[in-house]
Length: 446
Image (tube, rainbow, N blue to C red; front, side, top):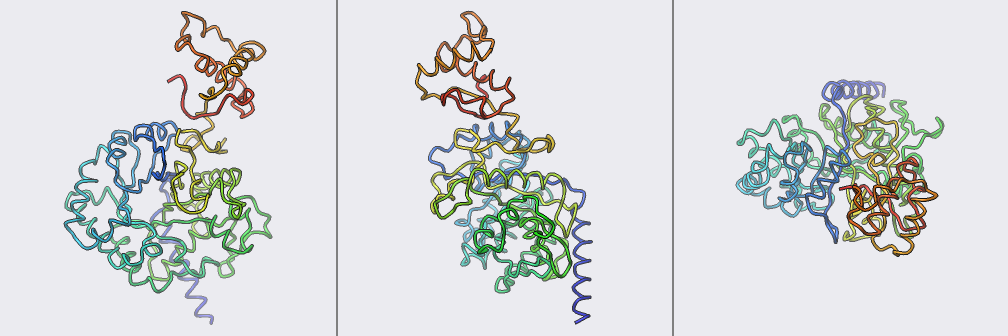
């Protein structure tokens, strides 16, 4: 028994050293996933305008949409392009199909579009198991095409796996992958190690919390501060865990170490929290979604790392940019977005004091505008109040002045409302005006 413990201790030490050597010192980043199941999907130029306004510098596309790849050109935004699961079988069975895909979707756009990685399928082992036997082939064929174009050093190839294939995930130190997938995972990890790529992980504490039957507390899932006696303790290492996210990431490192891979970094390609759900999803709320994503961004960008690997970057892509109203399934499936299709934030992330690098901090780029469908009489009354008791200087709205055109009550009210909102410190109460105004991320002056 003693030798078992010493072997485990040695394994953990090697894991710590190898991972810290390969990824320590790299700056973590927050990216966003851009799903397109919207009835009113914004034009690619509108999507890119929103990304710029929010200072989002990393995105993951779920396909190789040509319009998006063109719109992202010369923006500097780092792009992960995906091969959808439905294209996987064709690419995994044909080197030439893979080469054509790379030529059409990567070579044709690089370097104007800053493509940094290719995601080959997503959750293939759990959602499309019949394609699993060709997954590694598909990855190798895509990589070979990049080598032929001398792009293999600039663009990494990997495939997101679901954290659900990790068994016995707590305590993290004894986690291992579902052994039935070892024939796919071992060659996948071999490839990632030999090409200096990273493991892509889809991790959803929301689902872990829901499926735990009370074993996981909501505060633990949401990164909320815990009393020391409420923290989860890994009995093997005595490491304390204060949130589910870190425990999942460390369990992933341990599962790789169990297969003798100790120097492959992890990036989280999907995580998030829904802001609305059905009656049987009571924790899918605006407040919880805001809390999870705000705390997640702060945690990642503060370079905290995880308890097992402190200071080691775990860059993360939030699921997702927009609410996707066409998504099938429960109501929560339609409400993972940070923004509505019109660019309005679903909620204002609480990131004050966390530094200017926080790409999704909507607090500094919000405006107060008149609602297009507001009653004109109510708008006029609110405008009169803003220019009177509200003490807004409305002289620029006079004929011949800079903001007179367009001469209509919506445009004039928007000027007055937004001026008042900014003067009052951009609190939500300062953009109500009896229900005829809304907070938006779109600059009305444009």
